[in-house]
Image (cartoon, rainbow, N blue to C red; front, side, top):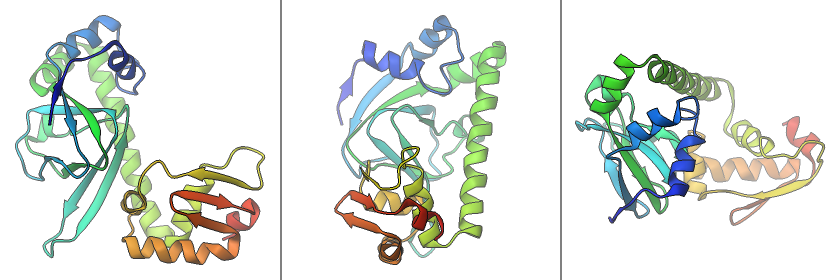
Length: 225
């Protein structure tokens, strides 16, 4: 792990993110003062479930997965955070991490001081409002995942993910997964073998998978799956 300095490009990433975009530039700079940047290699653990953490984390590049571990040692992904996402903010108020975090690929992560953020949220209505909106968004993500788990089969979850990448008006298209298939499996709440079976089931709807490339030959057939 290597410590880095915040660059102008990093500041633009903060300013373009959901939480920081609604804040005045002076407030953003106050939050970023003292921020610490570190590099992580794939599979490096940032923190474990139950750890006492005193920072909020922000993805400047790469990908981070949050997961929980069951009594039998199995892992269940809670979320996958790409560039521009902030996470572990709930530990600011709960005191401990509610899940473990791991770099899903080489990443640069900024750590922001929780104590400073709590103080600003108590003093500045803009920061408090930004937190409310951010936590509401996280709540919706959780509801969406729960509904997906209850309402959709594994092939339907994969089909829905693929269709979300379909350009408007296109019948056939292709795209490259932005991460490894194992990360996609966790993102969709599937075991890797369940993801493989889902891709096999979708072949009848014209889906072809070659490495991380996904080709769709009939969007309408996929929509009917």
